[in-house]
Length: 310
Image (cartoon, rainbow, N blue to C red):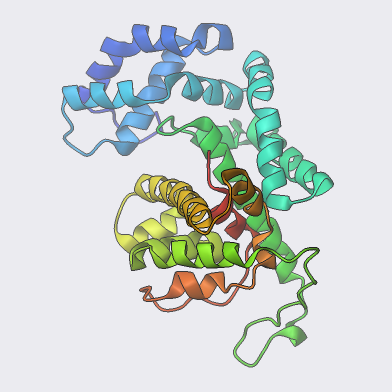
């Protein structure tokens, strides 16, 4: 538990009651994670997300809803247990690479992106004598694979932003926006039906959903920033983004099949780089959106709108 954050009696009681069961189910024994350490992790997560005054029954329900095995694996890795890290690589290394490939669209760039994340996940640095690992922020409220995809996508966007900062100020326009680089000619012309299907799918969204997608995929806003805009919890936005990405893919596939495409042909059509589409994705997402229009910027993460999240 973090210093200065007292554990409520209801959370403490729920953790004590469920500890034996959850410790056994999580595989902590083989990961090298002690009962006491795991108890602190469970209490920390519960205190972070449960509302003040939560009852013991609510605390038990919350703890039982966690992805307990994935939480134990992530926290054991962040604590530096080699057995846990080896298991993590077996389960997630190839998945991370495949996700990176969908984002970067090129093998060497994808491997570089995925590999760059390992040091941060493993925790090779220390702060105030404590190991620093990104995996220490995983709370088990969603899947570890989905969390890793989000972290990877954010790393890609951060790299993009760092690259953008190297552009000379002389290339900025009167209103402070950088001139866009000339668009390369697409290798092949995407089927016009894909553009129509994508436009129709985006148009079917509510103004709030379009704002969320534009903020996250186009403008690189964090989940926390979007949550503050809408006065909801960060986890609500995380679930919303994941749900919208899946829903959009299904809608686009449905629109394509309605236009006469076979299912397999429609799925292959979605493999196109969204930047090759003659479609203004930002315009479609920004329609009737509130708040005001964001700065014009093209982020490669928009590809996820069509690829969806598994």
